[in-house]
Image (spheres, rainbow, N blue to C red):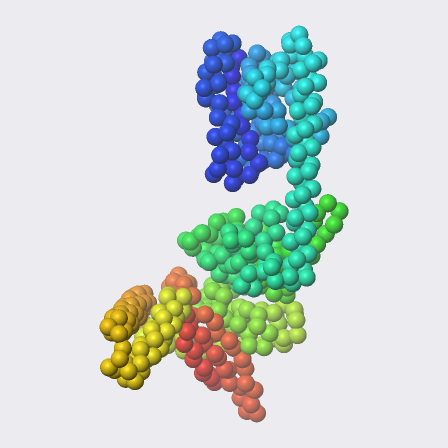
Length: 496
């Protein structure tokens, strides 16, 4: 039985949140058409969101599905497709747009346009005149899209040139203005119009880099990060192919290609990107997550760095023991010479530090701002106190009110600082207590894969970076480490 079908199309997801679909509302009209032609309304709705009719994207989406359902006989002859206007059907050049219209009408399905109360059917006595009118409408729709596309490209090129010339108006807080071509990569955020690192996902992207450089397979990385906030399994598969990981973006507009260095915050170096591509090309990975069942406490979380080249350090087996080694040197990238050290030395030191230390809040906990506010109020209070000492008899009554208010502000800020330090310290130390009952020898056992992975996740939240170097002396070598913690503190140490 023929039915009446509704089709709506909007070019951007932003229109979906606005009035784009509401402007194409056809509920009442469908009921009127149903009564007029004695045809029931189909429960199936066809809708294309963020599909361009100018580029024909909708023909590979719901509109294309509608046409194919006509061919299969699912949509019967005599049915009617209701659209708001012909530009919903196509904005391509007139010959292609007319082809789309006729591909429906010639199969016995009518097209009704709400804007002009017009029904296009193959048995229309005035079909020739109707098609001429349709050509005018479709030509106008195409002209509008061509001009819009031209203006959009010109505006895009202006932004690109502004970034390349370092024009200050195309930057904010050191971040470049977003170029609105294609989608923004998932680890970046351009909601305010400028390309910034995403608050949580940028660090996640860095972890994928480190895990890839340690030769974890795609499936292993997906399993390790499965519980991370915002992580999706599809983030990993083509990750190593993105040039923009290095901060560089290439944009093609018509026949021109623009390369923008430092367009986005860099997740990795060019050397690391090349390493990842070589690893994925060879499809090499680490078996059960680390070489031959060994698990380091500091690799794979993006904190362990070579002090010579700044590259990440991975784990490798040497006989019956394991070593942390410079990944860049091992892959023969850059100028760093191969070097490393046995993991037990540093792992043991880190375990002792984190199990005996009272932790302070992280730097992004709000404490730095409170400390800044306290300094301002203290300066204000000192100034008021000096004025009181110098003019004790001549100050107006309101002055004492300001003094009292400043003292109250200072007390309030001090209470917040005290509370924040206590809560953060308790929170971190609560996490650490789950490992207090585990003997050090067990945590340091390289074969305790699951336990060490859990401990490694804790370390990820406590440590910002560990910079490693080797100090050569005549009779032996010592390793030096600079350990930066998330609470802002730093420890420097040497191990034999």
